[in-house]
Image (cartoon, rainbow, N blue to C red):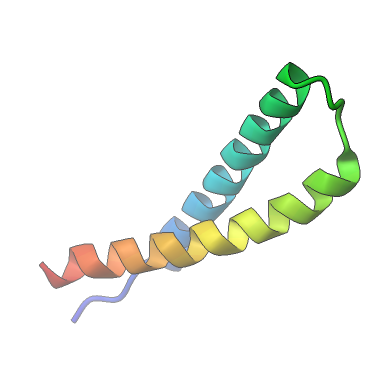
Length: 65
């Protein structure tokens, strides 16, 4: 059975985490909360881990088919 490419998972995790943080920044700006770097410092690693896990599972599922 072929293995999931770690490079693809890492790239997908960083892209997903970055996009999530950009969306959070946009919503904070629209709602008038201002930019809070402490909040982004928490959200970015958390989002990267979650997107990495979800990407890994998705790529693994695609390889099974």
